[in-house]
Length: 384
Image (cartoon, rainbow, N blue to C red; front, top):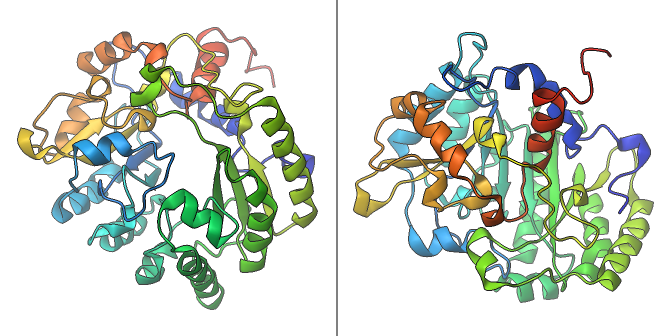
């Protein structure tokens, strides 16, 4: 599938940007301190006010309906910019993605957290369903980007897929946030192509016909980008033997809809897909031999009440709730994060990862780049 137009090749959804991290990733070696991740995902809360059919966080929502306490969030905001995993890479964490096993903007202290993080000079991106944005415009305006998971172009499709009739409210909130960025100089309103508000569209077999209406609406509201990603099975459902819901005919319809949508693209509005992380039928295509991405990024999540945990520290956003990719139990302090990172326990988690247990991999390009560019120098990257 043609994911983006040639003149928009260098966009925020192009995984070639990972090549900029080569010199950081060269420092990943067993027995030595690894650099801290450039990106940390923070899941403030495991609660949601929607019932999306495809939700890949159902496991965590059903098994750990908790949230990070507000004081810990502020401690985390102060810790991440000063965290130094390797003396050879002194910079702290450079970006934080606020997302979740739920709707992150439902957390009562998420505004102060974003304010504190951005005040330290760390860039923030937020993935939200958009229903609560009206209460947080000042904080969201400090973010680099806000991705709103609308996933439909009409009220009817939205309600059918998400179980609630919030479509008009979400669209109003998007317009209000964009208007706020126009009236008040802020990072979110900057002219960079990857900044601003993105209209996110998770593709299913039931919303292909909504692509063009969604693109039209996104542009009319002033969104900077339209971002389409195929849905896939969550890690806890792989054992069911289910297969992709996308037939060859559906993939063709998708391409035709995307081609039609490109009529609305211009210098101020981009249309992007990320089908390069899938095979030609939009099934998972994890073409790598080991997951080095667990040394490049991590997820801080709510702790389990029965384990007396203040938080959980995991290594994969695609396998939230899978204890096999998490550190220990009973974590209490942000200092535990620095202690565990690149430890022998970290390497043992890496060794035990069975790629057959992984769904579609967000970090598939990370792993391919590490394997073919860094580990084997297949591109002789020093010869520019």
